[in-house]
Figure 1 (cartoon, rainbow, N blue to C red):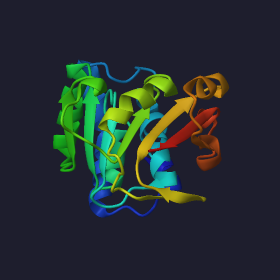
Figure 2 (tube, helix red, strand yellow; figure 1 turned 30 degrees about the horizontal axis):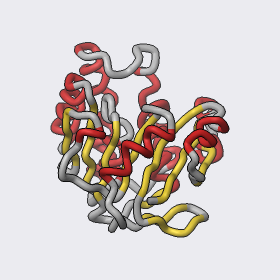
Figure 3 (cartoon, one colour; figure 1 turned 90 degrees about the vertical axis):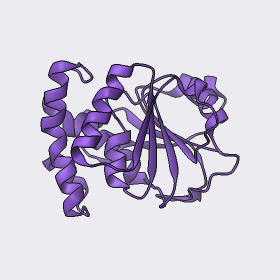
Length: 215
C-alpha cells in the first residue's frame, strides 16, 4: 500500500479504505482461485495495483466516460482504475468465468459501484460501445486494436487529458513490456508511448510501457 501512496496522495477516505482492503481480499481469494501468481501476491500493490495506475498517472478520464477492460483476469487494470476514477464506468470482461467471480467478490466487498462484468471474449460483445478500451499484456498490439475497434464509439465522449499531449476522445490504452519495436511495426499503428519506469522509478517497471492508440 505504501508504494501506491509514494506516487499518489489525493485519495478520499473511501478510496484509501478500498485500496487497503485489496491486499487481504486478493490473498484470501487467491487461495481459492489462483488469479495472481503465488510469487507475486506479496507484491500485489507494486506489480498489480501501481502498475494498473500507470494509466491514471498519464490519462485523466473525465466523469461519465465508459471504459472496457479487455481480458481483465483478476481485475487489473480495471479495479484499481475504478477506485481511482469513481465517476467513470468500467466494464470488465474475461473469457474465464472463475476470474470474474473473484472480480465481482472483490468489487462487492469494497463497495465499488462503477464496474460491471461480462463473461465473454471482447470480439463477442454485442450492442455496446465504449469511449476507451484498456488492457494489460493480453495480446499483441495488432490484435488488441482489431478487437477494440468494433466496440469503440466512432467519436468517444470521454475526453481525457494526457500528460504532455493533446486530449484524446477515445481509443485503446494498454500496458505492455519488453522490446516492442517489432510488435508496433507489425501493428501498422503509431501509438503514443510512455516508459513506466520514468513514471514510477522502481526496478520492477524496467522495460514496461504504456501505449495509447487514438480512435
